[in-house]
Image (cartoon, rainbow, N blue to C red):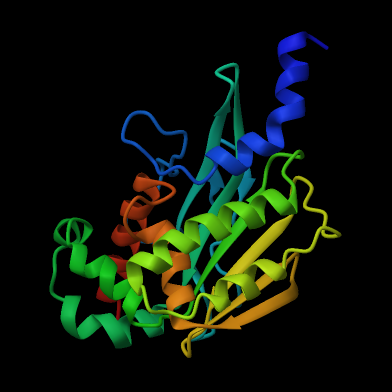
Length: 252
């Protein structure tokens, strides 16, 4: 193994903890959304192009009114010591069309899609309305540890909680972090789901098994703020989500 690769290997976990939560910067970031997106919703299971990871267009039977549909995909990447690019994970954001139409339709049903994509109130309402939402992360890098994932989320969520509500009970963040115990392995292909319920509960699942839940509307809002709020993981994915949600609002 070359010296540079050896050094990178030894420091990779600490680099991930330090860099993975840096926000996307136009033209400079390593997070991208899938460029080939149908006009308003995915008709087939799309593949995130940078990682080759496929996401189901529906998480349940698509004939069910409670089916969660895929509204956007992207990936999180980072550069290590200027010598190597790592695609850490791909992600997909899921929402329930019925919930979206009921809570956002009256206000935004008549808005053109391009106007919604640039409307900050629209994104704020997506976060504020306690919609049933789910982010699925699929690990793409075998060197990603559960401790690094926990530390990154705790740091980013702490900052966003402070912004959303400085008076919130930050114990919710400690409880959330406690779910990621060191005995959990997350090799490439592991699915990590974060689900927000309409009553403000954030549920964490790994490969379909629930590992914890936290009752906190502020924590839910802070978590999904990472994907559709300010300084998101992927700016392109955020815009794709707005485009597809606008399409769902308009469908009757």
